[in-house]
Amino acid sequence: MNRRTFLTTTGAVAAGVAVTTATPAVAAASDRRFVRTLDELGRALATAGPGTTITVADGHYPVTDPIAITNKRGRPGRPITLRAESIGGVVLTGAQSFVFSASADITLQGFAFRQSTTLELPPDCRRIRLTRNDFQLADLPGLHWLMVRADHSTIDHNAFHGKTTLGIYLGIEGAGTDQMAQGVHVYRNHFSDHSFPGDNGGEPIRLGVSPRALSTAGAVIESNLFERANGDPEAISVKSSGNVIRHNTIRDSFGGIVLRHGNDNRVEGNYLLAGKNGIRIYGNDHLIVNNYVERIAGTGVVLGSGNVRDHFPGEPPTSRTGNDAPDGVEIVLNTVLDCQTAISGESHRTLPPLGCTIADNLLVAESGQLLNVPFQDGITWSGNLHWGAASDGNAPAAGFRRLDPKLAAGPDGVRRLTAGSPAINAASRSYRDVEEDLDGDRRTRRPDVGADEFSRRRPCRGPLTAADVGPHSA
Image 1: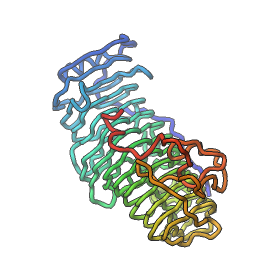
Image 2: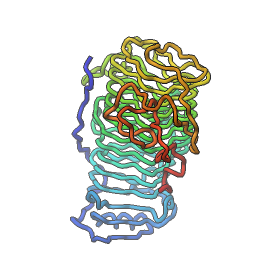
Image 3: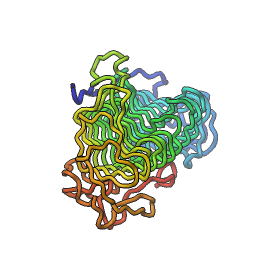
Image 4: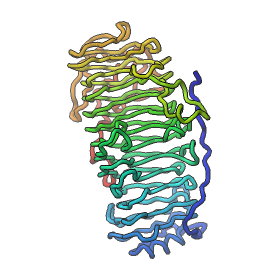
């Protein structure tokens, strides 16, 4: 098996189609402009430079000609900012709104997007930020709402809501057919109410596609809230390599977190609450750590099997779309409570996991079974703690102890360890690459079993609510 095979993206430039406008070398330190029409916006944008802020008066604006942002360049720390007078106060309708080309360090803030085509951040752009916007595009089958192909883009404090048809809220891809945008940061967004009833195709976030699986993207998807994300079994669908998925909350949703394609992803400190699907894993060298999975109607964590062993550059498309059997995956220090099955494998694909570890997880349920893993020869088990009336399933006897972990729910509903819990300082080994627990508390040299490190301090993190994310959050 060829472990950790990736393609490193260097980026590419695609030709733009919008009318080019000149960019002055430097804008005034306090270059602030106020416009009341789209024509005024175009003229202000034509002479904008680093540090310029253009405020658009609140109102409904039918966009008949796209607002071209072409050859416009701010600077890191001094972007060109286009902002609504108030958050959500500028409503843009029509086929298109902003069209980007060959631009960098641009910020769009506070707009309500109601267009009927995809908003694109193309690969010839860099450092584009979309912040505190509201996305509810036309509810058309197959329409993806936002597609990011620009390196080092930032998508933060936005709301995506109200889609009933095939299509995703946010896609992240890259140049060409096999590259990924580099260093995209997605945080503090609210993804809600995707109700497409099909079997798949309605993901809130799709991080890559199968031809790009071996491209190392370095994306960070963190502190986002997903509610009623029912358009796909995958609320966060990862189809690329080298990403971090952390501190997100998925609540009351059909979708879960799925590492569908790619290698070397880290899934850490997420809450998956009262939904249908938990965390599902394919590919190599992933770390699944500090996650809190509770009341999932299906399985809390699925370590998949495969019909291929290791994707490789140049493989046929029929192979690339296959499920890569997990190799070198670590599922450690997670808390899984009251799921139909806490941790399971798959038997309908014949290539088993190899070199994987399931250790120091806290598994509790009053019904169902805690373990159902058909392929066990390629898995190392140690230090897991079981409790509740649920059966142990086919868990290897040497890999767990059955003891009451003495959990108690806090004001946020999260069940954490209490004093005297047998989980305290009971992990089977130390974890040098895991510095914190679910709450942000420091892990000790010999950590506690499960996602929570016992502490008497108030947690600095917990499940996200609507007040924590989106355009109006802090």
